[in-house]
Length: 86
Image (tube, rainbow, N blue to C red; front, side, top):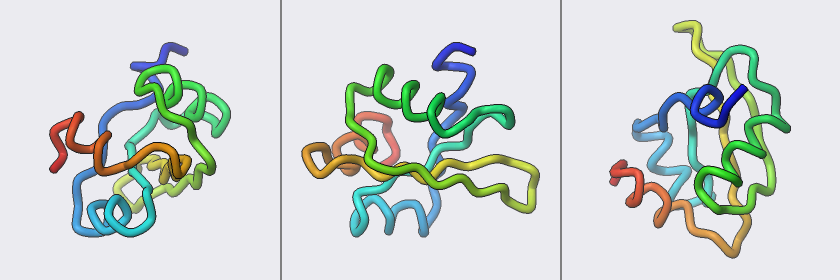
């Protein structure tokens, strides 16, 4: 599976913005079949960041979301502005 198949789009919500500002976390909607190692590899290769931790959430609308905590050397706010989220 290619990186663009794994990472579908970033999630923009109040909770996601709070995660960016407070916890250095960014939320992406990901492919249903994606695993944590695949998501980590896709994130690091696509956006040139280091990922510390990934949590997976299946929401009520049937989407799979990855809450990605970036390493302290990288800022989620910078990545989100590069992606046009903020």
